[in-house]
Image 1 (cartoon, one colour):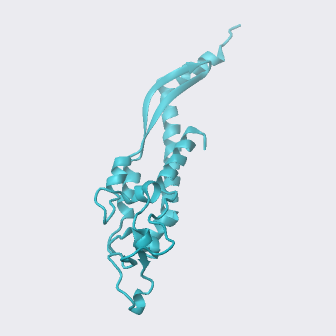
Image 2 (cartoon, rainbow, N blue to C red):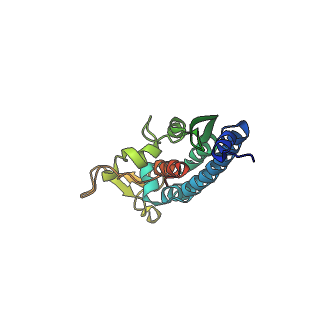
Length: 194
């Protein structure tokens, strides 16, 4: 009667070209699901919604031109340049387990260049929102009175800069959780640690 070492058979199948192809397909499908979730989270985030609506104080503070669409180039970079890369070669074998290495290409420099701060050359509004803060908040005046003709708003039509600081207001608008936190969550979910 013949006996089989199932662990060895499983390991050989998993490390074969067919096994590698199957692992790659499963991971690519998981990546596409996570990418869809990321794009949905990005589209539905309050920062994205406010910028797209061209309303609110935050939009005015960022100072986008009324005719601009700052979300579109960021979303295009996420959609086109965020990729999962596979070596297709097993990197470790232990018992009946085989490990493969995947890399997530996060286009941080492209995201930075796709999100220029309108009034501060070389800065990214994405980084300003989530990492650096937005200066000038202590002098920002909302343009809610614009309709009444009390004053003429700036380029965003949502606010303007006062000559002096507004009492009690910090100089920088505080950072907010946004895209890079979403990407971090995606990385954790892909690793199975979400």
